[in-house]
Image 1 (cartoon, rainbow, N blue to C red):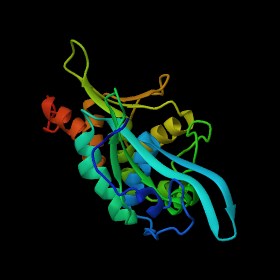
Image 2: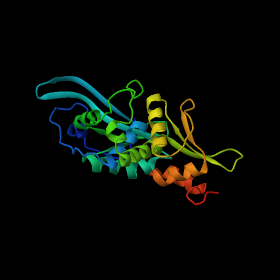
Image 3: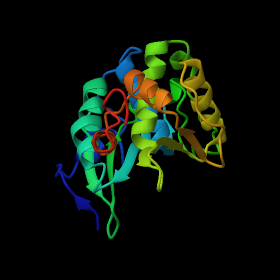
Image 4: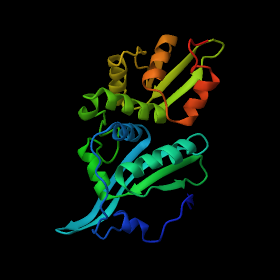
Length: 243
């Protein structure tokens, strides 16, 4: 049984055009390209997924499951997901966002049911299904705009990034971890293109280590996830010069 943090009416899924949709879908907003949309796209590339299963359809009727879901650590990411990502989604698409938690785990999720949202994201480059098999990448509409690219990278690092101090050393690293090799190359090339030097990809990790590069990253991209912001503050990485 799921631990639901917000209650909805029994027909909430139908209203949103999701599970057991009657085909009469409630209209959502379709935002224009923006930094907020690019950041949300980065969040989806990191910890999100899109699900689209049509049971059957006719001329004016569709029935199936159409959902986006973003998963995070219930202890470390709750503030970011509930107080930042949830309002971000609601503001972009004028859609309700359900907050839940998986039983017997530290994992929580945000999710919205909407065929129109799933279709919109697919048109923007986010194909439903397995992100690894689909080799999802940063789309051209983001790569071609520096501000969008910075926002997208922030969303990626907020979800799949980490900040830590190296053992027995007075130095720190910002790491990005992802098993999608196509996306990893995209992130590395994007950082280099933005003037931030980073390591070569090691297995599924990408590191920023030099103090000068850490400064560049924090000044240009930074974080919105309180988990990372707290560690940046704890390590004094927000001070200039770094110590």
